[in-house]
Length: 369
Image (tube, rainbow, N blue to C red; front, side, top):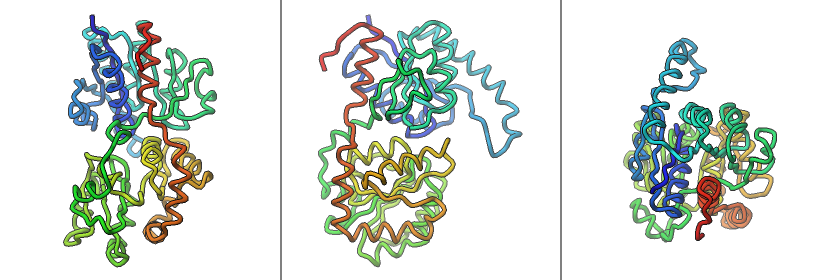
């Protein structure tokens, strides 16, 4: 008889793509496993998870709105409704285990599973654990974390340091730079910059690029620019008529994008950092300043201290980002130094370690891997 596992969470690519990587590793190790995702209605997991070939059910749930307190009036009712939906989903699906990957939809699913005595597992991708994960961690079977020093958030005996799961197509990519640049209809003879502000975009990065868009062509550089939906129209207008610039709101084929890139501009979220480390790319990081506990700055500093990346503060981006990127793009020795120092930091098998640990603890099976 097949095993059943629920994976809960989402909200951003930083939660969704690791969740899909874990799901793929579970299916690879135990092909008869039935996996159901649970996310939040209206969020990107409702689109991305089915694209990856998995079923997903959506909860009527929302996070706390810090910018408009009046919008939080309905929050208690949504929370109650989501718990009723979770009770129904778990009652119907009867999972053997539940995995939470972060995002507010994971809390009611794991909390209900814990009340029912179902084994629960957490993956905390950041160096600062969110409040809901800290609460859930007390009763979790095991907590998978990206870095050392997480004992201040979780019981030490429950922690396993795994790193962050990176999408398989990125880890195992065999795409050549030339092939990738042809995919984006760009010139393989030119140095190429990839700008990724996260799945929802990054305002400061986008505004900096838009303000200095002509500098890329003036310095014989190409740009692959993921804007996110909020900046999509402005990005298209800024790039109009410029053959050296490929622009879109979202890059589905990130393996092609990393293969094409000589230099990367990125936020410093845990998953972005994990991908940059695995692909060994020279990077200029612009941490999102309003992340919980300013953890993106912590992530970026960790690389800067190892001489493995360059950091620009968010409020300096408009003035300093593009000049810094152009300087790096024209300095092969600096690129080589950053590549050399970031290479040892890449973790390529976190998804397998997580999947195999869950299988062993829940089903008592050793996998063949």
